[in-house]
Image (cartoon, rainbow, N blue to C red; front, side):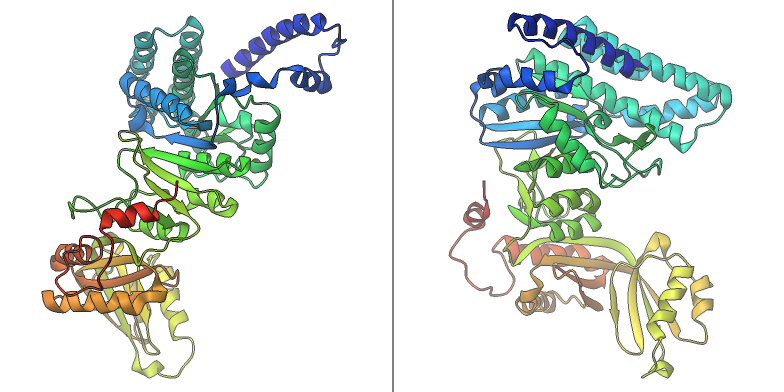
Length: 527
């Protein structure tokens, strides 16, 4: 209801101003329902007003997560960063915002408290109103945010009364975070002299399924978003959009599941055919390895979409594969950048990369399950029966290697197999099952067409280190080689390989390179 009221009041003021402007041109715009009148008025505007005559080299989407907007100082930093990027010719047609700091968690806690009979939005009220106060924002911003806080409090009163918090209600509950943060960011940008306007994502065309809590973007959304940005949004204005949320076809608020705010950003970037989607974090892009394990890890200049998806699966801080899909389909590059070091080029995710090894990642404490049946030699159906048993036990496999009579798979220990597990009973009579715990996966994101070159180095290094490989899988994705080793030597394995492929400190002789790692990074970086 707040949004509707705001919308009506804005429309009235525009209508009143427009009628004065129209009459000065002696035009008859008496029919307010005619979209032709609006189009003719747009055509009559001087084009110099759009973009304030500032040269624009590329149009981008900029996405900022909750940690980047944690408090007033971080909001100020982000808005000044946006302004500085505009001065370099990189204009954000859209800025996608997550909720401020821990707001989403606080909203979920408020829902739990309401179910227990207690209404508390004080931490949320303090954070957002203190931010507005610190910036000295206008009364209209305060009223807008206070209106959302009052609406939130009313909703929680209903939860307390009904003692029910359905998935649909949960989606509405957590939406307040993004709706408040987008209004504050837009207001701060305007204070800094950057024309900006806040939009709930559904007002620019973000339409989703009705799967509350895990909604997906409907195929028709991109056309709606494209038309909205083309027909209704001033190209010289920064559009600040709520991430993570949308509307279903019935106008109910939904939250996007896997991908979240990143998916909002890539959907807008793909729909509008922008030059780049920028995801701003607190690191200089995607790293060659986890810096907590390998302090010498370096930023990677380029990765392909397929490589980024593999990295995300193994826990790297990259976009979720679902979030990359719109950009991949539209061939829009995605760049991961550091909000604390904006001059660093970051990592660009695009169609292809040309590195021998792009990154090294790992997964600790996994199980290896060996399923062997010599009786099935030459018989069809062995693998299908094995996979049926795994499906029945709802076990998800990480890495797989197979032959005609055996198959070896890795499982996360928390979903693993134990003595007396139903999987063993289901496979009894078909095959022998042997479970080995305390294993680790070392994964090289690499060009598999050069796997002989990569594996020659890997096995020589491991032989020097006395590290035994218990299982090897070359992924069907063509960018992944995974090796299973004892968990106790996992870190040594990763560090030794990283030293070879990224640090020029290999334990064995490597093919010589004419360039240092820094020079290779510079040669690979494409602005």
